[in-house]
Length: 240
Image (cartoon, one colour):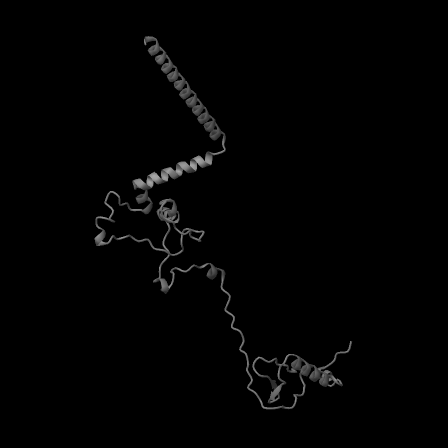
C-alpha cells in the first residue's frame, strides 16, 4: 500500500472546488452567512459555524468582505481530583451562615430527646404536627438549649422544681397527663396487635358467653318478678 502525503491530497484535481461547494451548501442550508477571512483565517459572526481547512500546505482563500473579530474559547478548567481521605473528610462546622455551628457528640440521652421531638405528635392528641421528611432523626449539626420563661409567665407557664427535669424525655414522663395518654395509646396498640390471634378469639368467646349468661339471668329475674306479681295479685283477689 502506497502512503499518500498531504501535498498530494491537496493537489488532487477538483478536491478544493468540491470542499468549497460543500461548505457553501452547508452554510446556505443552515441560514448562516458565508465566511469572512481575516489574515487568511476564516471567521463568522457569533453563533456561526467555523469551517477551516487545517491540513498542512492548504492555501487560504482570498479575503472576502469586511473582516470580523475572532473570538477564541479558553480551555475548560478541570478541578484536581480529590483523594479518598479528602472525600471522606467531614466538615467540622456548618459554616459562617450558621455561626460556625459545630457537630456535637451524640449520646444516648440526646438520641432519646431527639426521638421525643420526632414523635411529638403521639404526645398530644389535640395538636397536629407536620411530618419530618428526613429519615435520620439525628441532624448533622445542632445545639441543645434551655427554654427560659418570660417574667409575665411566672405563675402561668413556669414549671415548678418538682416538675422540672434535666432531660426532655424525663420531664414528659413526669407529667401526669402525658403518662395517662401514653398508657391509653399503649393499651390500644396492644389490643390491635392481639386482634385475630388465638388468645383474642378466646377472649371474644368468653365475652360472648358472659353476655349470654347475663341476658339469661336477667330473663329469669324478670320471669320470677312477674310470677311474684301474679301470685301477689291472686292472693289479694282471694282476700277480697
